[in-house]
Image (tube, rainbow, N blue to C red; front, side, top):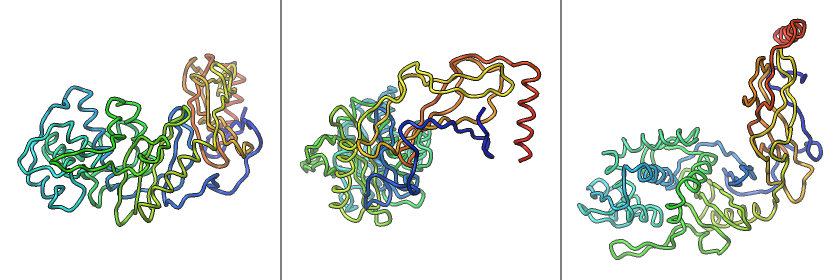
Amino acid sequence: MFRPLSSRLFFAFLVLFAGFTGAVRAQLFETRAEQAYMLDADTGTVLFSKNENDLVPPASLAKLMTMEVVFNAIRSGRLTLDDTFQVSENAWRTGGAISRTSTMFAELNSSIRLEDLIQGVIVQSANDGCIIIAEGMAGSEDNFSRLMSERARDIGLTQSVFANSSGLPHPHSKVSMKDLVTLARHIHATYPEFYRYYSQPEFTWNNIRQRNRNPLLNLDIGVDGLKTGFTEESGYGIVASIRRDGRRLFVAMSGLSSERERAEEARKMLEWGVRAFERKTLFAADEIIGELSVYGGEANAVVKAAGAVDILVPITNRDRLTARISYRWPLRAPLEAGAEVGMLKVYIGDLLSQETPLYAENAVGKGALHSQALDALIELAQFWR
């Protein structure tokens, strides 16, 4: 059996190429962004991370969460694209032309179709459009922001909190780059019929034509979304996705010094992600990945993933790839077949690049009394360490 660590977390080492070396948080790529996170959509491989869990003001990147709430309401039948929303004085003053912020120039007391508001928010980054939607759906921005934060937890955002629909400065609004990639990936996978708005090149409202604010859309490199943002506190940020050579990547970056630097750093990272990695199958479907000892059990548990385990690996520096099985000790008998028992953790250097749940292939019943007694002594010895 594997020797338990003091935290009672077991690691079975499966060295796939060669041993792990490198400095803490060593990366294969460098960026000027203060925070960044990039993920392959299909395999879930983390290709880059830098301060990805830092909480920063979202700026207009909060509009991604606003749109998720809207898309979810349409999908569930609570709203339709033809529903209309009234432009209140609050929306007009806080986010309209008078506010001197990003706006779709919605006219006071007018009514606007939801589909037009969606295009205003996504293409023009319209703050007035966000507030109009928030008030129309929830009665107030405060109510809507609570819906945003609750929905964020529902879809797997673990840290981010939203205090308004637009991303205008608020001390309680905070997001992480990891959460924003999770959100963007969710929007793309869940709402393909609405994702197309993120690549819409322009939108005209109130006879004013505005181009999409995402600078990567015009570079013809395969980028088809999503959003840019800026605050004095956190600098220039972006959430973007590229589709090229049969691969889709998502990236979120913040803390950049200018619009030009934002566009250049995002472009470089996305193109590096496409070119510097290739897809490999580490374990085929139904292939045994390892065996785990079972406390008081008659046998070890044979473990497999639910399907094939694919990952993107560096074209160069392949010797930096390692994998480990981790599980919390002790697994106790009896153990049912199909029970989730641990995780396969794959590292590129010291970057945790992928986690895949592992399941027991076989049921494990209780072993003989002398075997159970031996396991009990081992557990007692670990307790007194």
